[in-house]
Length: 290
Length: 182
Image (cartoon, each protein chain N blue to C red):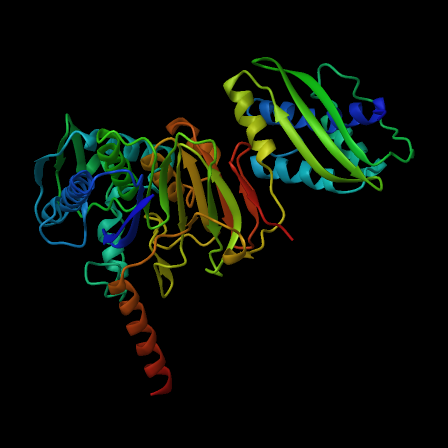
């Protein structure tokens, strides 16, 4: 396996590809991967002033987005409805107010509740219109979708065995029998794992409030209470797309798994603050218990 | 290994009422409140205690009004010692959506249930949901094992943070300390 490693969109990427390529082929795939990431960053990153989302935060208006925006907005809207608005892309301004802004000031100011989806967002045929300026945040599912898009680039190059790992959100494809052994990081003891997932031809995403945490906030904020959820410590989701796994992993901080079945097939593991774990019947992992 | 009929029946009686109760909760008042977690906890806890008269009676009594099929009023449980091992019970029940079935496997050790596995064979989507709520259950608290001892290919957790974020965190922490000590 050849491993490609780099920093992008605020996290560490590891892409495993078969080692059988010629150097020019590898270079070409690498270039396509980098471009896919750069284009996506320019659309949705809150951390650069020239992104579409930052422009819409300054001024209401319309933009034509690439075709992959349809799936993103459809899933986000569905999760918005299934969580009664707790899962919302309009949380961007609130995250900034809490201190998770483009400069990482981490200094909370007064938080305000975001508006409803219907008040602000219109999405039709890949055209996004905001009727009021608002900062959209796609941190919940954007990285997952980007992993899928990078994987599409890899598959288009004719590669069938690969693993794309963006900061622990994984998508793996293999023609071999052996699954990938993935440790589930203990949210409080980062050198430990609380279990192992056997991942094969699926995506796995994890979410926890441990790393991006400052004062009384972490990177997930409930738009209704304006506080970060405290009952759930960590979630993991296995699904056929990384977009779904990533977004559902965040949604599980707000609602129980049963409330989300309509988005599609997924397996989950939810760990609460007492380290009690609840997992779906077919979750492909074993947990370590006392 | 002989499988005591009473145990199969008892296991089925413990398990099946959950679905009836859960399924009917939306339509009529039931003794147990239908939040998935409560039902799940209740049954998991029972499964993990010794098989005693008290547990089984309570279950049977609260659910007896809701079971259509099986004989619900047998409340005596013998004090027989069960051989250690695995016992499987399968039960079917009538849901508003039709007939559904579920299989329960118990592991007994010294007359104590030490493990429970449940396989749901629901067809109806609502039954699937309720069965799945029950099956997922609440595990014991998880513990950590050193990653270096586990031969892992990958680790998944919250996303690794960029250097900028870590620097910012350090900065506010030292600010906080300075304020405290200053």
